[in-house]
Image (tube, rainbow, N blue to C red; front, side):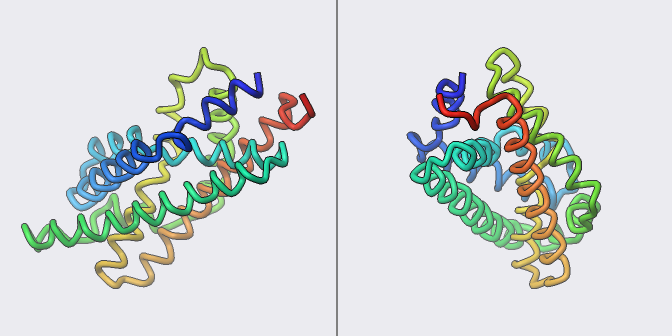
Length: 202
């Protein structure tokens, strides 16, 4: 079962073009949704975002001591996050050129800049559920809902918007929330993979 899970999680390692295309689309969608204060658009962006997959790949690589895959998944995470951040800045700049009045601190933006411990626990539980979904193909469809619950892309996009606005307080808050979500998902997935025995030699 572990080998099959590793193969599913390696999908984006083998097709990086698709990975970065989805990052571009989800980041642009989320940025526009945040600026328009439109929850439906933001939810759509969360479903499209592929960042949750390399997180699970990274977690599984850690407990199996697969050094090569640790570096590969870490690269995808860092590159994907950086790429999404840059896409957000560009999208915000384009929106500003089209309609400067749209660039305001909406409720959706502000809500992604006030992290607390509860966000960590939500991310932890979602990491457990998400890792279980990848280990059990029959419940894989629920991953979309898990991605929505944790929402990695929106706080990342708020960081990009904050950079464009040079609002350092907002940037610090949104970056902290992104880090909290990332850490929570990673720890949760490690716990689940260890619990079902993926850390043992097979």
